[in-house]
Length: 414
Image (cartoon, rainbow, N blue to C red; front, side):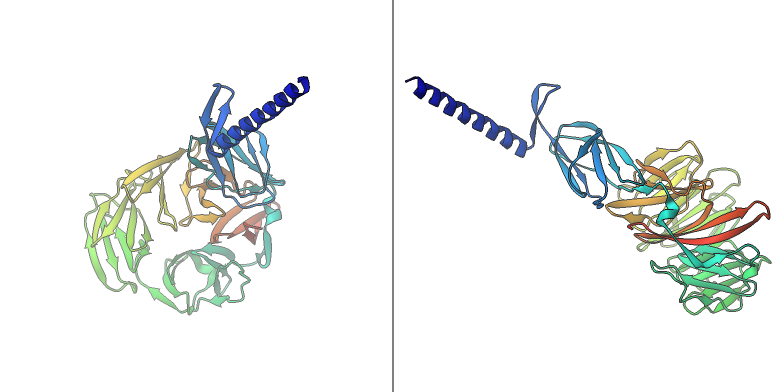
């Protein structure tokens, strides 16, 4: 009798344990978890980390998560957590992430930046200007330019750039180059003596043009400005298509233009020493102001997202769907946008900025900002593809006050 009672007791206990384990498993599978702080059973959320790197490790509030990226962290109680992604030899990526019940919280743009940048890059020996050589290296408009005493050579930068398709801008002396601007398949060259040329980037043929320096190219038109006058000209800079005068009674000192799909935009800077630029959309030969207020610098990303700076330190974006500006972040030091393209890397978008003499890498929400080339003497940078960029580094020889310019490539997914 006693053995029978003990048998039923143990069978009942095992059944009860099984039922409880089953209930816990069902609750867990359906997104419930017991919160020991509130002593309640609560619904949970999910953290999605789509960054692809099997060598990286993930930590949630300091606790290592098992598994290889990409993966999701299930059954996370609602609240704010510190999410960190780390890899040996790289700076940790760390953000605060909010988790809500029944929702997926995405980690966004994860970018692991190497502690030793030069160890991750490739020096292109064939494209180095040594001390004493006449000329310089220029990266502009997605092209590599090498100015020499009597020639100007150029080639389109690609992921596998090796200079094999280097061609000459005919009739242009490299030593006289002051600036280069690329607009589509054309390049505008401003020379030290004030002369200007248009170079066909497909053929290398050049044409001298007799126009002022104050013009830019967007869509299929050139936009020319002088004082309070703005005009649009055809591609050959020969015929005025339309003109507008005056522009808010202001004196224009700078003009930038952007094209997103079939939409054209211009940014006008009015007064020296003041941050009072205005951003317009061009529609049917009319200037329609965007609700950005006065701006400092602006960059239109490849995906059509507009970023701009205000008051020298604030970063904003413009939502074209709602027509409203969105505040992103304020910096302590002055910052300006230099990249007209977002750098697509792994799971998200990254934007390159220039802060005084430094390059910064930031996600589109500016939650994570990395100093790219601190102390390396990098003065030029070009994004070539979603995973490749090129940069020029100058090494100054203090004794001779001369510099060696070196070209580097960087495969960001290596």
